Length: 523
Image 1: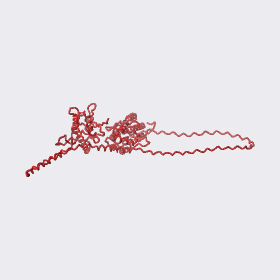
Image 2: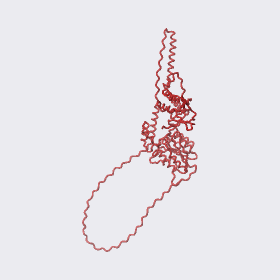
Image 3: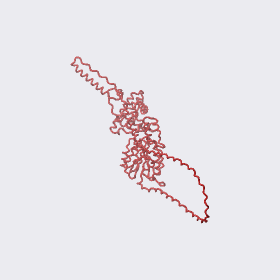
Image 4: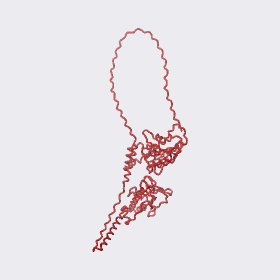
């Protein structure tokens, strides 16, 4: 099932449109979208937002499958408005032409009624693509006013809106001028020359094919950005281990033959010796002294109590986007190859990417375990906040947890699931607004593996927060070493940290909080 994004919400009584049969035009959205997809590009088929009514019928949510942050057409700069209006006019013309070619009368009527010129307040732009809400209602200001042509409307639609009537009108004026000249010459000539026959109008040119160059450019740009990020996060290669040469085998030593012992020669008996005195009995040796035992190590002293204005506030911002589902053990070449195959249409590669659930062994699971370890070691006078950003519609803020509520905090961390979208700027702004940052020091720890994908500017948000809250610092952990984390940290005097080989996630996250682990037995 495709992901659906909300464009805006309106009162259910604001827009109403009917078909020629008298029923609601919005009930035919599925048939209209299916007819557009069968004959026109997908971006044109997404022009009409899908209306979804609330349970009580008081509100209507206008949704689309186009990813990105919706912006009202009236809020765009003049040049961006002009481009969006031109695109909107071209697509409405193509849809009206399709209505004239549709054999089913009911579907053709619904398409024609939906493709009226909307008002500027009915048009939103999502990543450069116009989307109409409340369609079927004519408005003012969204598209250029139509030019009244002398030719039949069916010819104008069939030619894709070309201004062929201008040259036809000029040809007619030229013929009239020639007739007037001949009439004046007829007073002097016995036989006036007949007027030259008017040239038949040229057949209309076929409508231009849909320009797909922007789609190819976007795919190429996405592949280039993916390659840059994967190249930036390559782990250092381990040097190959030196192979020890085999030890030489020593040849066996030759066995010497046993030597023949010489026969003893009988010696003459010596004269008898006087009896030797008895030796004195040896005294027992003193017992050996035991080795001295090492002195016991001293336990680290508990930190001294801090004053209320010295106790910092720590906000943890966790990236819950879809890329955090990837396994942390997957090599860069494997990730690059899999994504490139999926973008080329390899269904097996796409299914493998969708199969990553963010469970054991994923980037998100490693971040969860690190957060739980840091929570257990955090000093008892620090309040910890939690915010998860993983969808463009908004962020999930769980506010602050006191030391007595840290069990509830870890339960919230366990329940985080990956979603689509990275609203990094919106999450940073919301986190900064919850911290004091003036009379009490504040630290925001951001864990992310990418840049903002929802149209925000995290660097500008960081600079604005620093101006309002001089005692605020942002430390960023870049999972793959890329993204916009460095400018956020630099704007507030913070640090941009990346995982180093041999360093645990828990040590990295504790370093980013700028708090020392609590020694055992301390509160």
